Amino acid sequence: MRRRSRTVKVGNVKVGGTSPISVQSMTTTDTRDAKATIAQIHGLEELGCEIIRVSAPDMASAKALKEIKQNISIPLVADIHYDYRIALEAAKYVDKLRINPGNIGTADKVKAVVEEAKQRALPIRIGVNLGSLERPLFMKYGYAAEAMVESAMSHIKILEELDFYDTIVSLKASDVPRMVKAYEMFAEKTDYPLHLGVTEAGGKFSGSIKSSMGMGILLSKGIGDTIRVSLADDPREEVRAGWQILKSLGLRKRGVDITSCPTCARTHMDVIKLSEQIERATEKMTKPMHVAIMGCSVNGPGESGKADIGVVGAPGKHLLYRNGKFVKPLKDEEIFDTVVEEIRKEQ
Ligand code: SF4
Image (tube, rainbow, N blue to C red; front, side, top):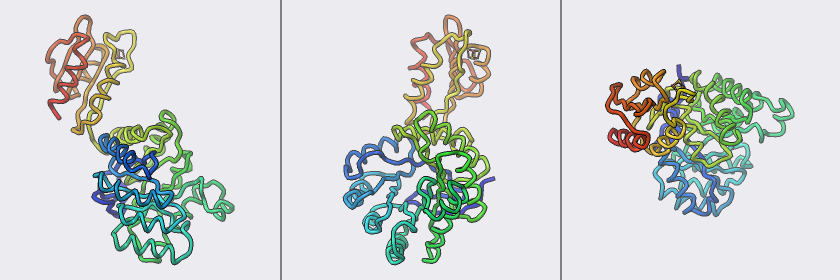
């Protein structure tokens, strides 16, 4: 059962409560280059990115958020460290601030940012990261989940003392066991919605697996309200991986889900190439559909029978299924176009 968290609105996306678990990513462009950043965000939106975060390391970046916000349709989050003036500027344009109140200086500076967020109805994400723990907590606990939880609680206390509760929290570590423990401990203590992530998880292969493990453990226990897969790769891979995690657990549905066999000596068609081609050709489609691409008749008819569209490899001509029923035979060179056309008809 899903953990009961409060609902926080990020622009037009609700996070927490019974809202769908949303998929986020972060741009890799120079934020001052608004055009490049907008183009990257559009590419991510097409793949299902629902909230986008952008770093604002300086005032010029904060000012560029105005143009960025005007040209995108998903909620925009500004990621800010240390300088409260950047936060005040960014707050004019964005839908959420990612800022740790304990890191932006004196109480009056924190108050100024929090009052601005309140006035503009902007939520704040507290983002605790094991790699940047406050020194006293590191001295007390070392690199431990307990340190992350205590850090998050101290930032929350600052906000609550200013009567601010529209808060989302993340407790990210680059190793899965500590990340899982931190989220589990924190989830017991409060009802603030949780942004899940394994931070600095690595490249596409290892990072996707680490993120799936960490988030999968938590999501399967009902913990987590929004996710970001953090990869040292094109952020489009983060969105693809994020959706795959949610779809794999049956938490969200979106677009074409492909079942394909690993192939073996019985294979009668190039399942691996076809699966990849069909996945890429249909990745911007949004209507949920199940497509099976199977190499032979051992498991092919069973999987195709459960799918909306299926192809089973057979000697000579392959077998096209729709809604579990055989439709017609296909030659090798007809498979890709026919399957994509069948999928398009349903979108
Ligand atoms: Fe091999 Fe057929 Fe199974 Fe594919 S479906 S792995 S080709 S036995």
